[in-house]
Image (cartoon, rainbow, N blue to C red; front, side, top):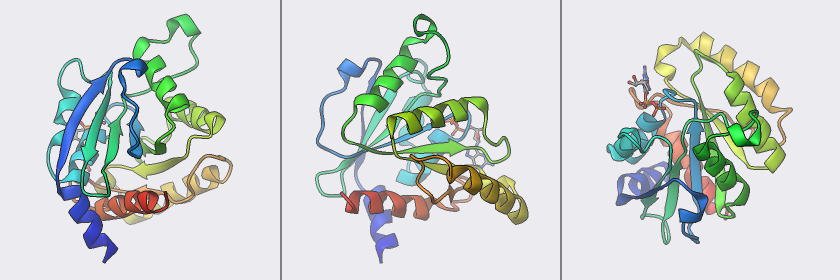
Length: 208
Ligand code: GDP
């Protein structure tokens, strides 16, 4: 029952609201926000499109929009909620003055956004955790930003290979205080795991 409801919510009315280069440009909303982050090419745009059932995230890959936070509203749950497509990361490490502007904006968003409910951290299971993923995880843990791992492009792996990736990540997750314990796996191409991700988001919204 719930699965059907989630699909209806995601495949209903949605729109691209705006892209923000600066944290100060982002209006204060009372709508819950769910953010998506990952290394570039991880399959983020494809996943957002698969979630919504149409090519809404195409805007993210148009020139100039890849280094901003893009906000999409989904109307079909209460007053609506927001999906936030964050730019590819590399937030920290470098000395303050060397951190690029869009990285500072992302960091500020994670630090200050009171209505941010969860960050889905997208990982390509073939590439595994990169240094930039670990940097992001360290930031989530230090800021106590609830994050959940979503493995993308799972059609590329055999079942046994995916099981191995899962068990390795589960061991790591146990040591990360801000990590939501359940790992999700998806294939935007084949449609695997999309309903589970939709259900997970609805579960977050229902818990508020
Ligand atoms: P983004 O840069 O993170 O937004 O990633 P895109 O969604 O643009 O995808 C990056 C590349 O991965 C493209 O060549 C996609 O065709 C490919 N890709 C995305 N999702 C999948 C998937 O579910 N399965 C496979 N096999 N490839 C995918």
